[in-house]
Length: 414
Image 1 (spheres, helix red, strand yellow):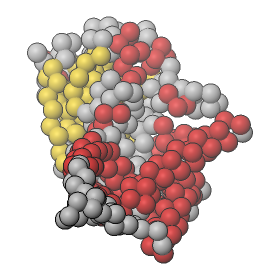
Image 2 (cartoon, rainbow, N blue to C red):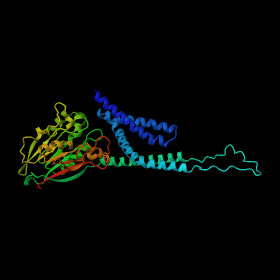
Image 3 (cartoon, one colour):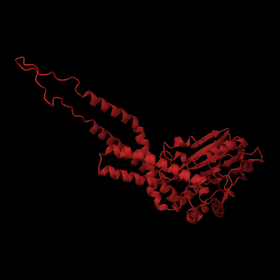
Image 4 (tube, rainbow, N blue to C red):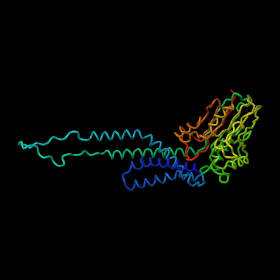
């Protein structure tokens, strides 16, 4: 209870500070005291409340909050990025204006007039000092308005592009990965890989149907769904997930849990996916006999499952120990960071998702601090890791620099 309250308090504090900064740059710096500044302040407070309200409301399946709340979250993100990027040039411009105003002031006093006839200097007029007009405040206001307009229009444009990308059809990434232990007869074995479908407030049955149709056209040997299928309960999203029953491949469809399954009733979803024909690999492996050889396909629960009772966290020993080391093994694990442990068991290839490829550049830079690989093929301690961008999105319905993706992994002999 205390940890939950601490999280809410921290979120409220961060959200408040971010909106205070936006209010200063977009409202206070661009308006004079009066009605418009008061209106801008009210709007900033409402938007600051909207962010945590959306986070909590969508978790409680108040889905009507999703569109306004998550769109504002994306706009807020890009406004912050752009305004922070403008801070240095704005500072330089303000200093230049200040210097110009200082150099415009008179530096020498006018000589005292002398009366003809030697009567001595005349009394100076009471208002002899003439002040130079100072246009600096007006120019600073114009500068702030220009920056605000630029940031606002650019943020709207980027967000609009990102919405179109997020709701567009997933791109197909074809990648060939050589495995040293792969038997010659299994050369060319194909695994259709998808992650982060994120059925929920903004993505429903039509999204699933499009993904299933796209995967079936690949005519793959295996289908791997590597977590974060849903953001909601079976009761609310079971109908949206139903088209998964139509997945086709030669050797079956397999699933491992992602962190979002643990927010959505993981036990019920494991049962539902089993009913739909997907085999859920909960810390176990299966043998895939194909083309005269055998491939070990293993799966581990997401690290979010630790301490959740029946749906435990990852158990690499249960999934990978006591196997024939001459066989190649492919591990399905939602988060790329799992490769650190998987490498200790000699895993040849790990297929993961979770990162969304960063989803919204430059947020990928933050993801890179948490995960060893953000997108594409890499290596962790000798284990090859492929990370797919995911076919859906979480939070803002926006993808910039990381389009939705389905991957066809083709295993090759060296």
